[in-house]
Length: 311
Image 1 (cartoon, one colour):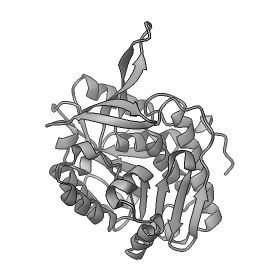
Image 2 (spheres, one colour; image 1 turned 180 degrees about the vertical axis):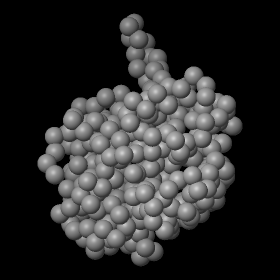
Image 3 (cartoon, one colour; image 1 turned 60 degrees about the horizontal axis):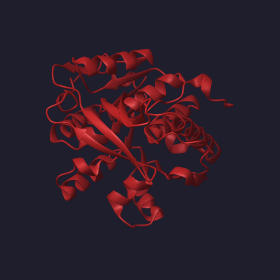
Image 4 (cartoon, rainbow, N blue to C red; image 1 turned 60 degrees about the vertical axis):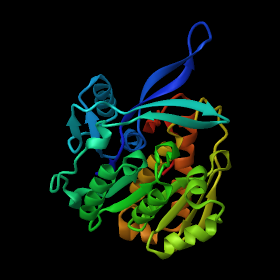
């Protein structure tokens, strides 16, 4: 099984009503839940770890996850409210206003011993859960237990408007990055974390501290990856009619993890030794899944039957 640990929320995405006026539509989201849904829809057994409310929106989240075959037995249900995020699209980029005080996402608990990590091939972490102290602490405890047997995947998925102390946040992201096998970030995330530092230099530093694979997604410019043995690989983005980019990075992450799993290259020893051809194939598959997600509103990763792909 693969599991994703982090945020589950409701995005209010922009749309228009019958009169042509701007309005919003509630859509289940949250970066880490999107990753879990994306993996499960592609056909791998997947679980979600995080906080889900018992309120109306929490029931929407649980129903959506169950419909996509995501196992929720490792999640924490509570009476705290669901995190809400209102989205606006500015120059093609999604910008968020979060309502996230004392929510279920902030109040999840890692139950030690509840997850049989010897049966978990990979654990994905990241996003808004790591901004707050409790979420970061619970995630650290989970990773400490998972690391001995599971590959650790990390996407910071930065949300600057939630960050109150940027130096502390940067230090926290560096700490999480130091213990992961696979790191994926967007070019926007990279700029927030590392400024104008060249991609190659930072990738080399991450590989030097033990990470096997570093990937940077660049929207229409495709993705570029660095692997400890396979070297540098670049893939193009498909040409699509974009509805919005919400969930595109999560869909890429999910598809990359699934493709590596499908090829037998996700477990730590195999990820360290994967060849350039296998890695390029996985990255191209991820780019195509992300492209399809961009053609429809909200975070709506593709199902396996929607992707024509040869393995």
